[in-house]
Length: 289
Length: 303
Image 1: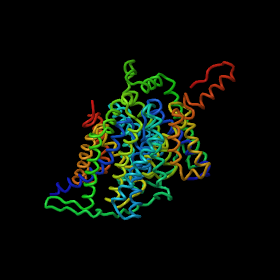
Image 2: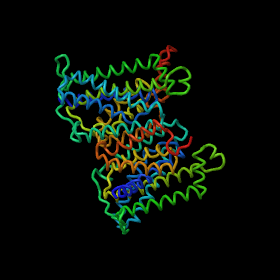
Image 3: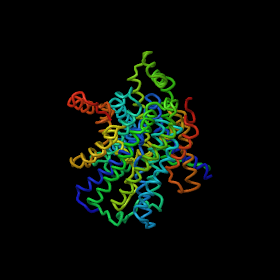
Image 4: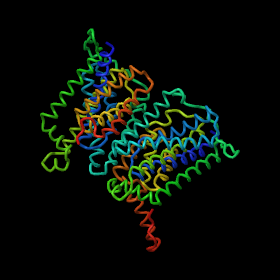
């Protein structure tokens, strides 16, 4: 039954990957920019979440505030940099993104923001019950992550398939110029895209913060990098691909660590998967072309 | 670490000039943006440290081994670049950095998070370079060596080949330039040169820690190349000097060094994507115009 327990653990890990990668792959779909500063949005989300929680003591309010703030933060990132670099060679917005990531990470570590220490995020399971069956079990925290992820993904799915906004993103991801030629307000559309994607990253930050009961300034480094691997695996810009790749990566990591132990540092597994993928299937699992 | 405070700054500046120049071969000449150059610095440093501390190898053997091994690993890691381009490669280089640091951190052979200490000072031809002016001269000599290689690469046929690959890989291939071969060259040479700096770095500090070679350090090096002017010889040198010296001179920046680097990258991308002294940059146009005017229609100064 260890296998099933590993699977359910992998599922929880995958949930946090999905939320992080969803925003990234949406941004990539529309802008074709590797949005490395996405990691900062994730950390800011966790930080705002833990602050709000310590004031009001309610997880759901903290989650909402964190998502709103990180959404606005994402839009600000877009309006202050990428907006002006849409027509530059692709390395230009990439390097600007790297610059922002380094700047925010450094600033967040300063004592007047998060400082260099870890904060506890004692939200527990936000009152949700634990599930325990003969085959597998979820702790209250895991139930919380599962429920929030499913709700958010459902919202994203509805926006993508049932609204004009979702349609405008699809159009923009195919051909930006053409999209604006047929009357799509590209600016609003992209800003909304950033808002949603960044809000998801903020939610991921809050959930991981609660799960590990710790929030710190450099917590975004590895998840951001793994989120990139996931969107490469899934096919850049493909949301179903990102979900599939999150599950695969989480399962591989969980089972390899469980079976061969720490022969390889856990985080290099993702990298090896990436290299193999790039060598043999450069367009990803569900990528176009 | 003997020698005054000022000399230490100069030594680091010289080492970072070599690093920026070597990164420029890959990113500037061959057009492959790398976010993992600190990994090569680390591989060189650890090679040299392990050889001298654990196997009591003479410095110069360890130094050469660092260059060769890092070059080999760089060549090997350049292989994905044959299959993937642009964004994907950037991710691969970023991954190299994370993995190399985690290997240093979690493998006991490399000392783990405690690093390797008591790395001996280098001795060459019976002279011991124990910090101070001799070590400064050693690092300057290495910077000159790097500059020479960069100059050679940019002036000979290979320079043109790199340029065509950077501009349009498919066109380059149709002209008979083999993009794969030149990209692998660029990876290998760039890594090897950084590995040499790594050896000098390790023997200067006397100790190495995984945290010396993390991702942000790579960004620091990339900032130097981009700030100075990507793809030129003068750019990385000026970039390395300014970005090492400005935080030292303005103490309040010192604590915010990476905020400063990051903001600088963003501002450069917004206003001067070619860097301070790159071809086409505002300042470089002013300088060349001024030179042309003062030499009364003499030869155009281009580089």
